[in-house]
Length: 398
Image (cartoon, rainbow, N blue to C red):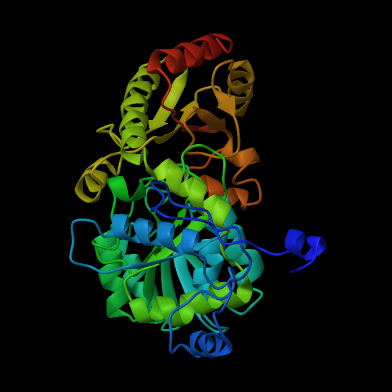
């Protein structure tokens, strides 16, 4: 018989007799081989099996597979998903897997500020040059691709953060294929419920699952989803494994828990955002409202063409500029000031001083991200409460 101390130390087999109804969490760093031969076979690829949770974990892989299935739902496309530690991790891991020194990335000037900084401050130092242009101008985009054969990635957001500007996914995907460049899109805002870029021709989709996919603000994770199954396994998985950008099982499980109400939440986000946009559009203190359901948004028709819904994100500009904006945000009592989006409650952010603080001001303003712009992630509360809070805050600046 083993000693008392040894019995305390050793693991025990779980007495599982029936399948768990809920996805189990596997909070383990490593997995046990039945014998040395099995270990050798798994390491050499002769047998499939888990080794170490940085390489792969059952909880994480189950959620990644579900996310990939959602992105291509309704089509005959196959896709592979790899979950990572955050949305930024998804972007950087994808870039590591697809780009090398001497390559260029063609992108837009109205990206999420963190992505712009990643390109300018990290990948540029690694020899990957970013080029920013107006991707809505397809002729100009093609000219740049023609003149720069070292562009290996077309990277974009649509709708963009925080102006909700859209670009043509099908047209850009076709240009990427024509000039031998990967196409990748940040699909965080609409989620696959409202937009499916892989079906529209894109090579890769990334998400900050922290946002709408999780929906409850209690985890940080990301996912990369691609149609080239071999490339995903050989290149993207290898980059994730060796750079150590893997997701952990707890955050994956929380993401999965949030996914169960994704459609219910997104429908409510959209309904509330539509009502709020209509209220703001008629307010005498508001100069402009950026929401895609509004017929006067410059990209309303494009959004209608490539999206099945408009989502829960909007932004607006007060006539009084930054001073009015500060007063307005300071007067809010029900809505929450927070530098994130996609939660169940309504979240307000000032891009110029928060998400886009480190982006060149001239670039910001060229792309509509002015000092007075306010971003709203519209929650699923009763819309009457959201509007009442906005209304009393508006009264404070009159």
